[in-house]
Structure formats: C-alpha cells, structure tokens
Length: 204
Image (cartoon, rainbow, N blue to C red; front, side, top):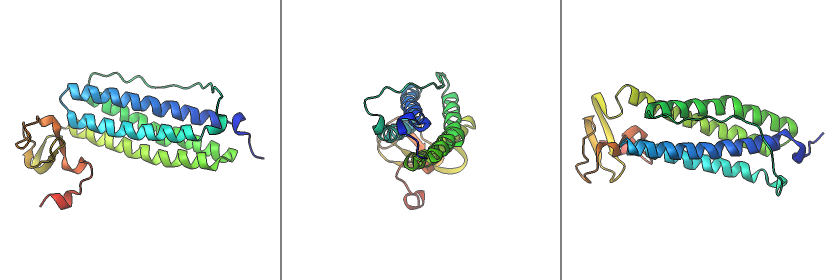
C-alpha cells in the first residue's frame, strides 16, 4: 500500500537532509574564511567548491518536498559543531561528517523512501550519498597532505598550480611567491587536485 507523503517518514527525512546540507554549506563557508585567514587560499577554495555542491543537494531535497508545500515540518536531529582553530581538525571533521552521511544516514533514508514507495527520493538519497563519498575522500586527501607536510613540498619532483593566474610550477616544493602574478604560496594547489585540469596534458 502506498504511503501518504505528508504522513511519511520520507517527508521528515527529506527535511532533515535539507537542514543537514544547508548547515554543511554554512560550515564549509565559515571554514573557507578560516583557511583564508591562515593564508591557505587554495584550501579555502576547496571548502567553497564543496559548499556550492552542498547547496545543490539542499535544493534537490527541497524540490522533493513540494507535496508538503505550505506545511511546517518539525524534525529532530543532531548536527555537529566544528569550530576548530586548526585547519587539519576542520578537514578531519568534514571528512568524518561526509563519511557518516554517505555510509549511514543517506543509505537509511534511501531505504526508507524505497520501502514507502518514493523511488525518486530514494534515488536522490543514494546518488547524493555517492557525491558525499567523493567529498569525504577529497577532505581526507587534503588533510593527509597537510599532516605529512606534503601539500607544498615533496621528496621528489612534483607540480603545483597557482589558482590566481594558472601558473604551473615544477620542482620539489611550491614557490613562496608565484613568479607570474606575485601571489603568495597559499594560492598554490597540488596539480593533481587542481580544478578542470588533466595533469597528463598540462605537465610535459
């Protein structure tokens, strides 16, 4: 028997997901500001890039709540407080939250939606879970590079891109100042993490 959407758990789960994504967007925007204060512009851009994707997730969940238009939905949920002063702690917290989301929360929400007959909502939960998995891996990779002091320096030759002007630097470490635009080292990102870049093409 089909479940009335307005009486379903899926309706509440969609609102929980909307709230969670909205909060994640704000947390990452705040984390980006902190990264900028630490002169880690490139890490700040990664937080902002992820924040924009969380906004898109929130919008999708909000669209799926249209049947409850005009209603106020009360939810009960727990949300993290990640106000760390350490950038690596912020990255670790983001990695943890994204992992919990894709492994546990959205899988359970998707299963519930499927059980109640809301297949479009179930698909959204499962598909967005895969995106959150990518977020978790990205945050984890950046955290690892920073903790091992290999974000800007390597034992062997590597490559970095300046996110301000696009200059690609090769060597064992990123320059203190970009030789092209004169922006500081914090604008450099390991080329393997640079957006819209195929390292096999741009590095000869």
